[in-house]
Length: 206
Ligand SMILES: [Zn+2]
Image (cartoon, rainbow, N blue to C red; front, side):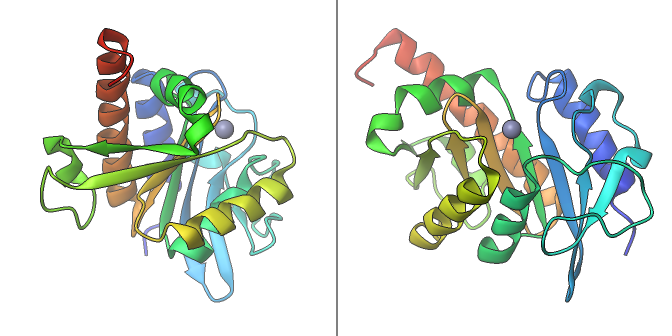
């Protein structure tokens, strides 16, 4: 397969330009091999406006670097590995948009919220109608990545049909069978989150 470094770097720059991964926020990965697991993932603390292919590292199933590339993998590597394992994802993308940050705070008390009735839902894999109800779970934020990864695994097992989730006052995770599908899910979910958020500002009970 083509090594995903180039595509991951381009996605990072694109997401920065669209306000979904400002500064050093966000991280992106793609599966290179499943057995044993090898993942290409962005290095930690990089400005996403200048992300380049040589800043993409390779990690193994425990999240430690395995390739020749120098650098420290993203702090959130264990979450990417949890999603690859439990959801069977081929690529995982994590953004820090304004709308995911606001909505993850507003709806935390209910553990998440539904998005339903929007035509754009049909951009999510397997969804055929705007009448689909998409549950968006929210996890409390933490800097303890091993425990947040365990929490992510538990939540994914409880919600096998979801396409993404939020972390409170932090951002969104989504994934796909490959990078193209995962990138489409970012676009679709970011559109839906912004639509729901703006609608709620007009009518808070919405
Ligand atoms: Zn993050």
